[in-house]
Amino acid sequence: MWNLSHDSDIARAVTYAGVAPVKLSILMPVYNEAKSIASAVKQALDVTYPVEVELVIVNDGSQDGTGEVLAALDDPRLNLITHPQNKGKGAAIKTAVAGATGDYMVILDADLEYDPQDIPRLLQPVLDGHAKVVYGNRTFGSHSSFSFWYVMGNKGVTTAANILYNCYISDLETCFKLMPLELYRSLNIRSAGFGMEAEVTGKLLRQRIRPYEVPISYRARSREEGKKITWKDGVEALWILARERVRKPLG
Image 1 (cartoon, one colour):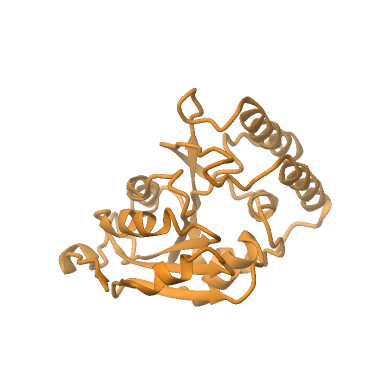
Image 2 (cartoon, rainbow, N blue to C red):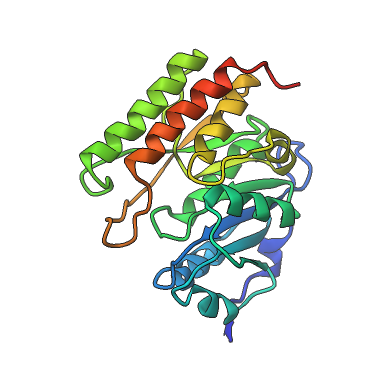
């Protein structure tokens, strides 16, 4: 068994700027990530967090040995859940949300594209009382982008959201979306796949909740390394944003 130790003093919840003690649920959907999952978990749990954390991992029907790697991990902060069959990222997050026990949540993919060292920076505006929804804003460069068309597609979807909702956000498709767990549950996200990113943002903007943005690091992997998102997901995102825009405001 792999035993990942942690400092109990760091794991305790703390209070900042009059904000009640916070527990953060890090939600990790996993599908066929046997090569990266051990490193992804270790990196996530090695971070010095200013609050208590749990890592909720949903193995979404992996068939490449991911389950065996996960079964060998041992840390009291881990909560492992398994889907017998692949259902998609949105469905995996829905399961993770149902099993989470934190006050706030943030999504962290298992593909090593995002650096969990950025999570405390996402959390800081919440602890300071300046925000309740925080997005990690990726700055794409030659060393960090998957392809020209991937970056343009991301910018196109984000621009469409800004036009439709008369707002200005920088990175709609970012994985790093931090918010109260109960707020996410109230959104009732139905998209099973990558469309959940657009649905989350559309529903937040429809409630006039503008995310606070924090710069983050990013390193896109190649298709050969396991990149799963395609142009079809971009088309779906545009459809979802338009659909949510014409619905009546929530609440």
